[in-house]
Amino acid sequence: MSGDEGVGGKGRDDRGGGMHGDDRGDGMGRDDRVLATTRALSAFIAPFLLVAFVLLYGFPGETKRLWAWPIQSHLTSMLLASAYLGGCYFFLHVLLVERRWAAVRAGFVSVALFASLLGVATILHWDKFSHGKVAFWLWAGLYFTAPFLVVAAWLRNQGYAASPAPDAPRLARVARWVVAGMGGLAVLTGVVLFVAPTWAIGVWPWALTPLTSRVVGATFCLGAAGLWVLVDDRWEAVRVMRRVQLVMFALILVAALRARHELLTDRPLTWVMGAGFMVLFALSAASAVSDAVHRSTPGRHTVRPQAH
Image (cartoon, rainbow, N blue to C red):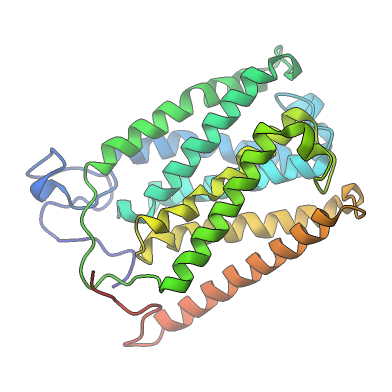
């Protein structure tokens, strides 16, 4: 079964999230649709992320003039920008392409965590921001409201989540635990950066401040999406996440090359993290290629359907 196929023809609105019949999220209403309100939120958020990506990735040395606060490290700017473009891709996919809530709901959980942490970081480091700039008020407005909007959208759309089909393609057990393990490691790294920035600054591969340590930590916590496979091990639950991951990892690797003079090569974590990102990018790319080959071969599937 293709991850882009809808479930059940009756009572389904493919594109706009319009509803037929039962509108309460039970019975026939549980058709796994992506609601119009969810798409509307995606349409609202995506342009902010695209503009932020252009500013931070295209002009990492101009944050004093263009951004909500001056970011000294170009690599930090571009890391955050990588997350923004990955997020923009995700929300545009929700808006324009995806029809099934199961394929994107994990992303909303990680975005809510990311936005919440950035809102907290803004409060903790209020004095570090450039309060006289429009960029700051856009930042503050977004991260003081986005967590509530994203959680509200998730809760409403979750009311329409359908039970998995018995023949739905699922991740193999090893793949499931690998994805969950990588997600857990990313979240653990993010938590350490956020709650212990002073310690993290001393071991991190490039120079950080307490504020940027927490911002980088929030970015790593986007890996929480990988933990969702412990709840839902269907292949479609990770399909979009893998594409977002490819976008982010490619941009991060290019950023590391662009700002290689900032890397502290005397720190072991620099080499460990560099190798880790390259391996993860290679695995994600190989998985995407393999999936494309299998989809183009009649009668073959990326993973074997398993019944509950």
